[in-house]
Amino acid sequence: MPDFHPRIIGFLCNWCTYAAADLAGSSKLELPPEFTVIRVMCSSRIDHNLILSTFYRGADGILVAGCHPGDCHYGEGNYYARRRFALLKKVMETLDLEPERLELRWVSAAEGNRYAEVVNEFTDRIRKLGPSPIRTSTRL
Amino acid sequence: MAAVLPVGSDLSGAMNRFLKTILEKDIVDAVLMPMKVPSGDSFAWIIMSDSSIVDDAEAMAPVMPVQGARALRSLTRKGEGSIRVLALMRPCEIRAAIELSKLGQVKTENLILAAYDCPGAVPMDSFVSDPSSGEDLFRKMLAGEDVSAGEVKPSCTSCVEFSMTDADLHFGHFGLGGTEVLLIPGSPKGMEILEALELPADRETSIWDEAVRKRREKQVASRDAAFEETGENIRGVQGMLNVFADCISCRNCRAACPICYCRLCHFESETAKQDPNSRLDSAVTRGGISLPADRMLFHTGRMTHMSLSCVSCGQCSDACPADIPVAQVFSFVADRTQKAFEYSAGRNDGDPLPLRSFMKSELSGIHEMVSDAEPGGHAHE
Figure 1 (cartoon, chains in turn red, brown):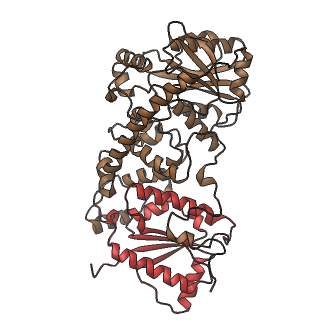
Figure 2: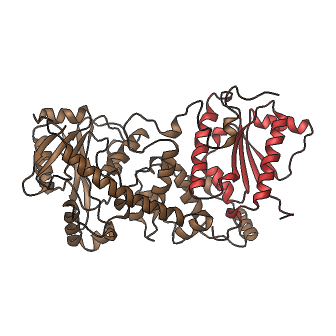
């Protein structure tokens, strides 16, 4: 599928990964145009329905990224986020809804290079996976 | 060890007499149990303080019209009452009540939760259409006679938690030939009741244990078979679409669910409403979408919201007018999600709700990225 341009949504925590995205940008690192950033205050702000509706509304991949465990701006938000994420991933896995289209990563504000790596790698993965079956179904 | 309650001619009657006695002796102030409705085709939860009313009640009802935990929630959601109430319910209802107490919806301080060996329930629709056959069927189930699986509520045929819950008091009758009931205390509250009645808990329970174990073995096999079938049916987007194809979006499954207590469900909220053009965009880019919208989102969303507390009571299936096997799907998903967190819904063992707690180092296996990012394990650039 040479001309497939996925739609990828990145929910980035304001304090770490969003700042890392900023750093990557001002360092003029190359980032994929298919990746759309949505800033959230904390990775724990992401609830299941937000992820699921994003898939149902046509995302091919979703990346949630926040502060490293132990470094949450609010103390413990990312630990809760990790649990929720594990639950959601389990549900997607159980229903065989291609859980590899969903990813959680930790990227600190200082890790501009790592941010570019993570985003490029994830985008490549989704390009290879092709369009999400949720996006292409006409009976949803 | 357990105390013994002699049974005369009928099991339910003996349990009724026990409940009457504890009311008369002021050991509890009220009893919550099922009572047949005047039309005779269903049962309702009645909380009774007058012991003479107990005669008209039914300790073990053939059907489950309203999940008992919902009855308890309507009683105690604003706090515990000042009187002591004993609630006699099916094990799945007790388990749902324990989940709701963890969710702050049921206060158990002044409640004594009592359960019994449950032979399963008769599906609501078949009972309503023919109550007397339904009662005959339930009598057979209680006596341990073979009944065809199709006649029983589907979630009951694969229920493995039909006995010994974390109730305060348990009425065990499996394997005892209908001659006696074992009163098994599960907490200090249950023990106090036996002490107040001067019933010594000195009976060995091995015969009953063995009967429960045997039944569980059989149920586990039938549950595993059901899970395998469900797992195949719901695979992928297409599988989900096939299973939920008949959904009419009535959301009765949510209304009947004891765990879905939210006053404002996400799916009724402003957040769930979408701009018409965004729906139309979807229709144009996909070629078509189904309306009312978000049918699949509703079911998958509900799975993520309540599956960790799902007790597999099957009320969702009973409430579905389109005969979708909602309970089978949700039980299957719940089994997987609860195992992922080593959590078992309805246990009163001090385990907090999985989403309300965490450990600093955990879940490294869930995906590769978390493990490489443990605290201290990452290098700042």
